Length: 461
Image (tube, rainbow, N blue to C red; front, top):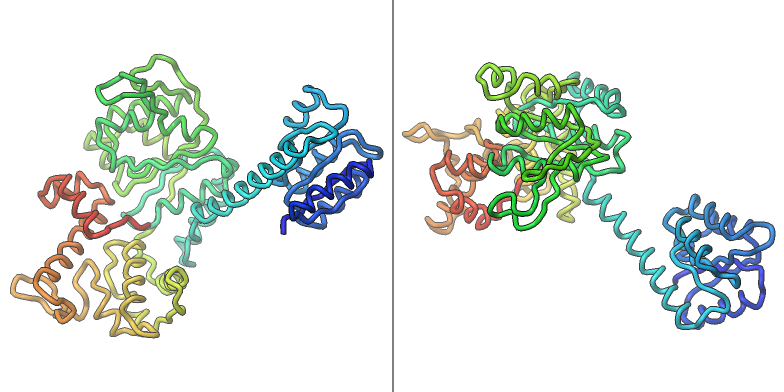
C-alpha cells in the first residue's frame, strides 16, 4: 500500500489531510514537527511527503533540503497558508514536486498527490531499467595480462587521459572502455559509442560532429553529433583505424581545441569530452602506409592498453566459460549446467578465431544442445568453431565436416544452416561492418541486410 507522511504543526490540517487520503486508500502517518519527520523518513520507506513550510523547531524548507539528502527520489509536496509565487519558486528550486496553498482544494490536492506518486514510480522504474541496460560485465580472468589491465584501469580511469585500446576482434576492447568510463569521474554522464567501421566514410563527419539543416541533400533537419551528445561524459571511438583521413583531421582539431563545428555550420561549439579509442589494426603500420595520421595517433595514445587474444590466456577459459554458462542459463530460466574436465580441456584446445565473442556463442550453443552437463563429446560434436574442429574429418576439398546431417529434414534446411553460419562468421570477422562483409562475399549490401534479418543475426559482445 502507498505510504504518505504528513508533516504539519496544525492538528486540524493534519487530521483533514489524513481523512482525505485514507478515504483514497493511502496509508498515512503524520507528525507535528520537522525534526521528528526527518527521523521517520530515515527509518521508513514513504512514497510521498506532504510538508508545511512555516513550522516551529524546523522550517519546512530545511526539512525539504535534508529530506532529499536522505532520500533523493522521495517526492515532496509543500503546503502553506502564506503562499506566494516566490515561495513556490524557491520550493521548486530546492527539489519540491509541487506547492499548494492552505486550505487545500480537494481536487487539486488529489491530482497533485497522484501525479507526484506516478512521477516517483517512473523515477524508480527508470533507475532499475538503466541498471539493467547499462550492466557492465566483469573483465574475467586472473592471467598476468588481465591483472595488468585491471591495475591500469584503476589508475587511469579517474583521470581524463585519453586511452587507446588495441586487440583482435572480439577480445573485449569495448568492455575495457566501459570500465574506464564506469570508474571515472564522468560515470554519471553518458558513454557514447561510435563504430567507425560501420559508418560510411561520407557520413562519419555528420555522425561525429552533427550537421545543420540543408547542409547536404538528405539533411532535412539539424542533427546533434556524437561529440555534443557525449559532452560531460565519454566518447568511445571503436575501430578508429577505419576512419577516413578527412574525419581524422577534424577529430584531431576537436581534441586539440575542445571545439567542434557542425557540417554546414559556422558556429564553433565547445565540448567537454574524454575520448577513448580502440582498434584491431596496427596503427603504426597504418601510419607508414599513409592511412592514419601520426599526430592523431599521439593524441589518442596517452595511455595504451592491449587486450590479449584468448589463445594467449587459455587458463582464463574455464573462468570465462563458467561465467557465461551461469549468465545464459539464468537468462533462459534453466538449471546451471556444469562443464566436465574433458570439456574444459577441449575448449582450451580450440583456435578461437572469434575470441571472447566466439566463446560466448559456443557456450550458448552447448547449453541448448547438451544434456544436464557439458562433456568433451558435446564440445567436439556441437561446438563447430570457425576453424576446423579437432575431431572433424576433411572432404576432398580440404573443408572440415562433422557428418552430423541427421539434424536436417531436407536440403533447404541444410543450405539455410550453412548460409547462416557462413554469413555470421564473415560478419564477426569484419567486426559487423556490413559494407565490407557484402564486398567480401560478393553480394549487394541490401541483400546482406535481408539475410541478417531472415536469420535473426545479432551482434554480441
